[in-house]
Amino acid sequence: MTWVDFVVLAVLAVSALLAFMRGLVQEVLGVGAWIGAALLALALYPRLSPLLEGSVEPAWLANALAAGGVFLVVLVVLKILISFVARFVQDSVLGGTDRALGLVFGVARGAFLVILAYILGGMVLPAADRWPEAVRDARVLPLVVDGSHWVVAQLPPEYRPRVAAPPARGLPTQDDLMRPPARNRT
Image (tube, rainbow, N blue to C red; front, side, top):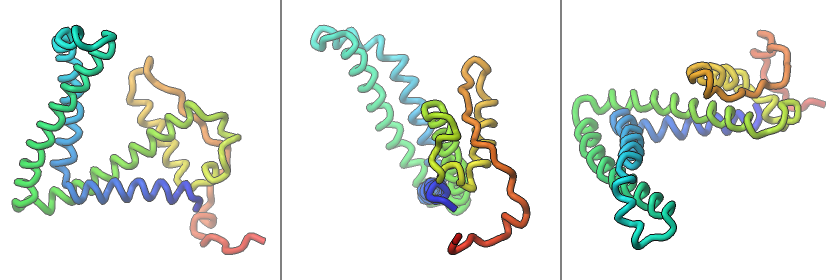
């Protein structure tokens, strides 16, 4: 295992632990709060930016302040409401189930973040044969590549980014997978 494998495992573990502590209800509603705040900011900033244009120059700054202000206010209000709902669920009989499902959600979120990092990295980094050896030799690389192909396939064709192909490497045999790592390769 390379350091890349450990970083991927750490991302999965931290995401799972945070989601376990918060619970599924708080995690899902939290994502909804961010989406709702962004949508309301986009919908309301055209009405609020004229109020700021007289005192804020240039106009793009007034637009940004209006959108940012709406976003922050809506996000804070929704987060306060979500904390009450999540506390009610965690204190009920469903608290254990909420936390267990939160753990599953956290692992899925961590996997999505790793896949997203691979897609974005493949868009800006050079060809795969010039990647660092730790990335090329990572045991999780085939799983991340398969996941990135699946995620990209879910997008409409006109928005699909190019997914970087990893360097060609033979598939590991059963003996390779079952053999413990060598302590000394000399």
